[in-house]
Length: 219
Ligand SMILES: C[S@@+](CC[C@H](N)C(=O)[O-])C[C@H]1O[C@@H](n2cnc3c(N)ncnc32)[C@H](O)[C@@H]1O
Image (cartoon, rainbow, N blue to C red; front, side, top):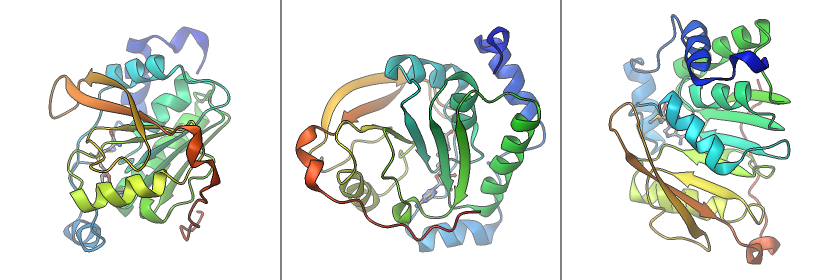
């Protein structure tokens, strides 16, 4: 994103333009059912633009970072990071096909308008539990409505990733699997103001563990 459009009101305006006819709130019943059958949560809500900015500043995202949003909805968080930071890669993974399509359409518009600062930005459709995340340095997930079982499985999966990985979650991970809590923010979300957001970090002792393979198909 060009320098003059990096202030928050310009970011809001740019996102409004990208998402003028795209919303993640209503999805077809069969998509909801498919997510439930895979033990995901179809419930929708979004992190606010100002909150993403606070997160970016707190994490000091830079050129070496690879950021994933697990359950990325229509991709606003991913696109905001991609438009306002020089990260190496920014990826959203979403199970609901209609939300994923919305994210791809918004990304295409952002590319056309020359709004991206990140070196790479991609959206993949699929279950994040099956995704390859080996290059992640930061993983965000809006996990508020995830089941205890999903949180446990997700935290275990992430605990096999690279030392130093930062895991940002709106729900405590239930079992930490070696993650240490390094911070907590209060951020405004679409459903609640000043919602707790927990920041965990993977210390170097997990270095020997291996990341699971992915069967998510690349678009
Ligand atoms: C609360 S929304 C968060 C949207 C966005 N990350 C944000 O914070 O603005 C959670 C999203 O996770 C998706 N989801 C839930 N379980 C999933 C799974 N196992 N794999 C991929 N996406 C999943 C839902 O379809 C939903 O779009």
